[in-house]
Image 1: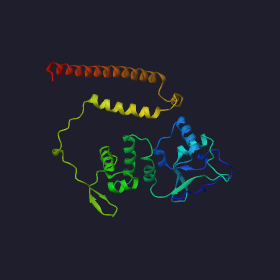
Image 2: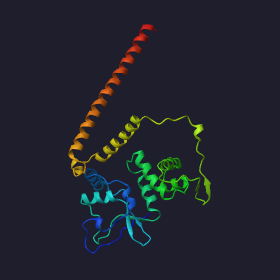
Image 3: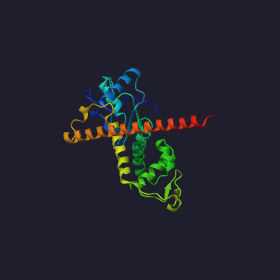
Image 4: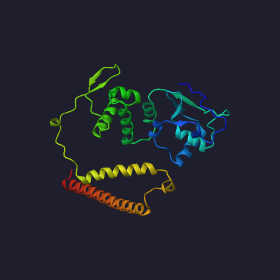
Length: 273
């Protein structure tokens, strides 16, 4: 779509784009960058220009909402790059229509560094809005494969975020039965994992999410947390102990491998060519 250079205007120069443009809820599905990341992005835009236009979505009443570009606009302002022209009009934007949630996901699902769980959560959000649509139809709208949508649908059904439908509607408007799922008798007996393994799986997920949240972020950003200092210190000590034990396990495992290799080599020498 051709970029346009005019949008909502203001009589006085605004202090920030946030004073002029309303943000659509679909844009809030994605996290904001840290201050350090915004500075880095701002410098890149200064050097190479804006790679992607700011995407606005037009509501039924004609109001324009920001759908994609919060971080780019924040980065530009922090780097001293003019977001508005001399008439107070937003620069470098493109207007889109259609379903805002589908559009927001399609613009970001491949661009951003999202892990598997985050990407699947976004797709579940889209599926839950119109679960009656076929996997292929939803996949085409957001730009992923129908197998990816099928996996997200199965997860959403498991979490009871959407109902289990016998039929879905294709692009031609016809309702068709979903592919039959394997019966329990066809599957090998699956025992529930031990509680400790489930806890470990959850621990892994929480730690990875914390790492993503705190990557390149300064501690001051989280200093106003409602968690008290004693609990934070206890968590820090526990994680330090986990790290020490983890290193010990890794060292023991490595030593065991070395011993096995030496043993194999010794046996080979004894046997001879």
